[in-house]
Length: 267
Image (cartoon, rainbow, N blue to C red; front, side):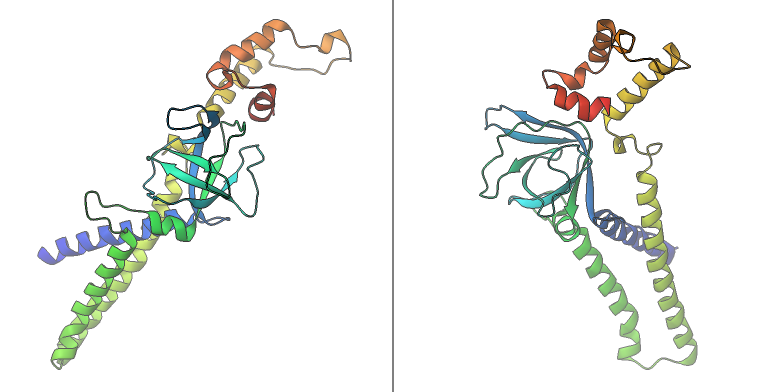
């Protein structure tokens, strides 16, 4: 029972070790940790104005220095820039955009969708998991644990000659370690893939997407069979329809311009 308990603890730590690597890798290009955007907006704050990015879920990345990240699907000029953008993390759910010289960006950038990709090596380095005064990455801890386990299995064979039945036991231990490593890796990959599904993790979808689905359902209910119309006054949008659009998306539109409305809601 002691050996089974030790193996379960060892397997659980291996899963956490591989999961940390899989999350940092992202499993798709561009490879890196993917953070779902809740809001990008220019804000005036007591600690200084700037373009702040809010995330749907808290992350475990900690950095006192600026790092370079990449934006995707925000429908702004931030997308698909090869050089990336400098940012500074603020707490566990937000960050602020920086210029090349380290000053804060003070331009109007507005969006309620998209993804921030933290490069793989940076995400791996900044994924702190321990709290308090000790802050070691799971990656280093996992490597240390694997090294200790391998050394403990190899030590009996180094210190004393193994008999034939002991050699079989050693091979069983080596096979168990290999299977545990492979199985823990596959478990981590499956857990990561499941976490990307909206059914298991609602935080993978920006809230704006839900509002758009609800509004589309309302439109289908009011006009189940839409038909094209001729050019002219009959094609115009009525003031009441614009008001319904504004009222439904008011939590997102706020005092933003039509550029935001078109890129985030209409398209």
